[in-house]
Image (cartoon, rainbow, N blue to C red; front, side, top):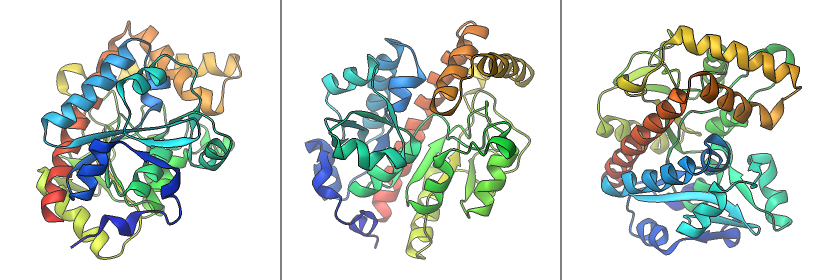
Length: 314
């Protein structure tokens, strides 16, 4: 039997504000799904971001799990948000906070929208083992020169949280991202697919480590991994729904345009991903946003069912 307390970071609980609904579910060993706030604060325009955030929580509940949207407000790590707090993130002005920024933001009493990496870290503090998101970060294009590699990859290697996603974001160097995950020992699984999904596109041409057909299979693998004492998380890739998938050639052309704009504007670091996503929304006349919403909604449904199955095992 797995004990969620094993996965808490010692000494961190006094900095957490766990919403009563989430706290009750965790205390009962029930299914909980962590959701990030960078998607809300930086991934989509207002008010589509707020509508989507509310919808994601509703999808998790409809599948029998409890949503725990995570963010920092006033130096407190919020594990689960009220609707007013969710709107605070959606209206903008909240900076992105990754793992490296957590201590400073808490110590200084600041606000922060959590990335995949910091959401995983905070989820583990609370004993949550499943997270759903759009896509993970990875090695940026040209990363072999710039060394621009997302903290998400290292977090996946160290933190026992399964991340349900549509693969890595299309704007990244996907082959190098997969190589780094392999080096770090992170299992990359395909949910009813043989290739790593490429966010807006269903296929990348890059094979996953294993194909799993059901949420129960995923839960069994997670249980065995952590019972064996193997550190870190898992990437579960779920292809974007076919009716919302974009053409790979179109996406590549749009990314090339966006990268040229970013270089001309000297946009890099934390600002690069939101900038490129905004370029794609413009260049695809909003179809990339529709795909983004569709894929993250689907991931939340899968993530909730995985959490339910994992709770049964536990």
